[in-house]
Image 1: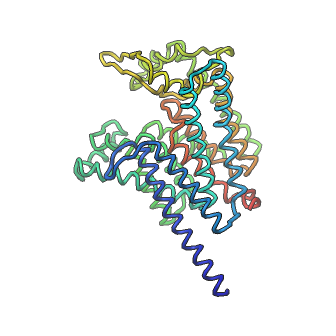
Image 2: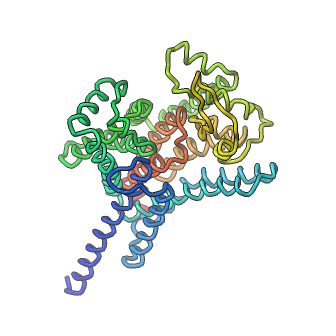
Image 3: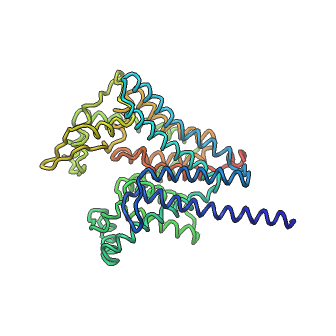
Length: 430
């Protein structure tokens, strides 16, 4: 190898390491902001995480201009269009609703800004997958670990190392039934769902190597520090279905996916009917399930929708705008909750906002479209992780407002994208 080519390779190698470090630091900041807890460094506004998306995209542009690397460009492009369809479609449906309803400009802008931020996520992930390949999962996870560490150090400073460890052990043994102040401090909001997806991925791709065991252990600790019981169910269900899927012949895999879609439709519409009829709270109380006042919130919102083909919908982010402006008060026994700005139920949220027909698109584009598009573009082996992410997300949608959350989307896209890179079709794309 000539001295000139050797120096060129060394420079490109140095650039790769610098870009990797910059990416990890951007992820630390993005996830730290998503956790919404002040750790040992100042907490910037939540919009900062989308500035980090722009930073990742800028890194990719710079890296391409220097290296002209074409590997994985086609794969990144395919990932981009698959992930963009739900957001673009929702924006178009909402625009039609806004026009028909003559919505105010600030209302329209709020919805379009959310879609734009979500699309920044998509572009940033596609860029990161292109730059780093399968290593992108680990690099992104390092950013999440850094964010958790920033909060954990503050928790230890506030409550002492002994108190922190003791409360963590109690949380594990009581399955989040006993959470002291240190563990409540470690409730990391948006970041928690993303940590669950990392744990799911490292369990699914298990290897008996020191590197993988360390990552698996770290993902377990980070996830359980911000333990959400619904996410444990989501991880178990996703891994169980993924394991069963891979044991089937290709023909029978179709039957499983179709069965999942039918079950999903029945569950979601059954859920909505129970809420609309006012039975949800009654059933939960009879089962002795603590809904954390969700039954009262759902009872308030059920007046805003009708399960009918004539229900047009109210446009994206209606709930956030409405609850930001309303003077309505939701009473929970003697406690008053004022301006609940989220329904904590994405099925009801997007039925209200997108209407009867728009909600059908939302269901299709976030389940069947993603699953089948990954199968068509990358084969059955490239589709499994995406199927698992869809299951995980739809379980979380039942009790929380996670659809536009940064972490669950960014990590879900990252692990889905990384999982296809070793497939035969992805290698053929170059």
